[in-house]
Length: 153
Image (cartoon, rainbow, N blue to C red; front, side):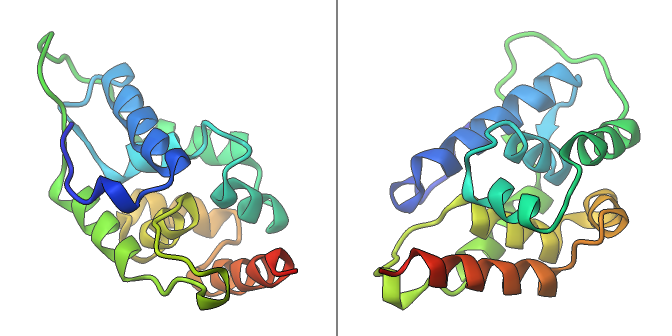
């Protein structure tokens, strides 16, 4: 999968997209949709996005089950290059628009920015899964700001 602007991505954010691609393939999708981005985000419990979700009391297993339950497996041709859907590209564009914490000299895109992008533009399935866990863009953003403040020495 080729997506430009990788240079500013953290390693974990890059892996998140690779995990999303694996999820799309596993579920028989022909492209990586926002739901797959969310599933990819759930792979690495040490990424900042999952640490934020943990602070919000999110049951990651329930979140995964809710999203997977809404996706249907489809047959897919072998050896096809899988690409991002227009909706997934929008999520990434929204992530780039997120303000970075100046006090951390941040000029990167991390999993937390992709989480906020999913909350802003992830579509009905993603929005519903987060809503059922009590997660909104506002609660996530507030928790992230607190997290950033704790990172400053």
